[in-house]
Length: 390
Image: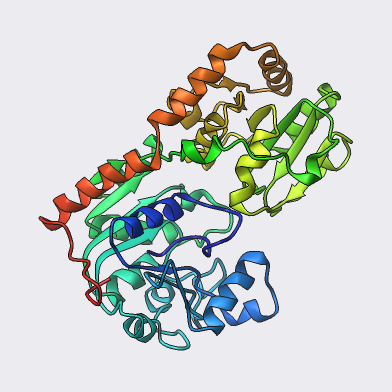
């Protein structure tokens, strides 16, 4: 499984949840992230430091040794810069690694695998060429070509990957349409989900929220270019009695959010703490800008907010409009503020509807569909005996 974030960090994407279920189902998993480049010796953040640790240690064994986590170091990083954005670089990126990526996998017992799983942003052509596999999956969770820092040649490489893999998993209807248009042979719409039981624990209020005024609106997730700081800044000014909690790594200039005194930047927290923070909030928010990139996002956080019983207010992205969740849509700051205020007078009925929505959309149910699809790819359930293939 080539995914976007090192294991154990504050951000958990769908791949983390699927990996847990593969492990429960008896599989052995090699979890790979990156690749790193020599630039990361001098330019790093929390995520790249976690990857550097994996590389320096030659990988780590997790989950009683059934997961091998690793981040390769390449001398040919596929990046949005002249020369480095060429297709040939992505194809060669795993062959120019120190030590050789293929050798590391072989030493870890993954020289050949039953299933090759690739996420958006992964070096998919290099993986398809360099890792012997029985079946391949590309999980398309973003319109990556629309990101401002994506290499200009990415769209063409993604087209080739969609045509070569056995199955494309699309997390959004927009992405499902995109996968078919790129020539995919088989596409399964498999949106995000949640673990309702995780958010029903009734954990104590986090220490850093004690004394923080209520009501509290919380955002959990990366604060990046898709986060509408201007919108939320105006909402905060319209609702001075509310406290707005931003929980997650900061990757963009917040600008308008530096002024309002009722906005608190909490930074990243361990994912295991998320239920406690949501339990201490009064509403969950998704204030995203509206563009090509965000209309392809199927926000996992909506499911987690609902699992915690929180009222949800979100900007009207295509997926949030279509997902059928019990939430409020708001295109302007005044509508957003009105949606939050309306949530204060709710009775028990709406909360029950949110909890029921979360119970209908679980990672276990998604995995059951995925497992059936994998059986259809291979004709039988892949062998996973100890000491066998990955």
